[in-house]
Image (cartoon, rainbow, N blue to C red):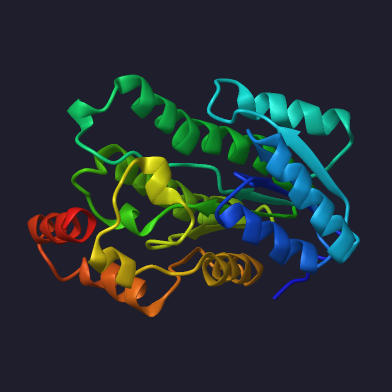
Length: 261
């Protein structure tokens, strides 16, 4: 396990959810932070708290990461401030619940832009610099839904399947350049995801819900240990493993029952 002390980390989606715990966990290790998300006010409050608690430097970048060109804009802004990112936590993303044909296509493409395109662009832009320095760490946040198709979360699950496939491939591609790429695949987590996705939480799903702190800690620990992928929680690990043993039609039916009751 390596130490991250004194390095700079960029955390996307830093105004809520797992981003809050990622920020606190890294700041506790004396990592300087760049917080990036749309909401400036909650990030400024978080930045002030982290500076006071841990004595680290914290910069705030209020930016709509779902906007085309956002990744390049963010990279240029940090270059102009001479901030070198050693750790990239690609955490920004959201889901949409409901049938694809009942969801305005603009909302779906906006989600795809954030979950896939911006994530890929950020990984490329900062990963290229890390590879040139032969040092760096990148965490991609996927989902347990990445392991199977999920009716009523069709497009969201597909975006996370992309993130998982990308992350595992890049783990091997960039290892020779001194860059660690780890993919975090959390199950249902108490982050406000359901409210953002306009989804009700079933009783079964509530039983399977993890708190965000251990999920974030699992991701940071796996990144420090140089792992390719991590699934937090024993139940979630068992669920992912069971996909190897069950027909895909059964997987879809099971997820439909868990998600929609």
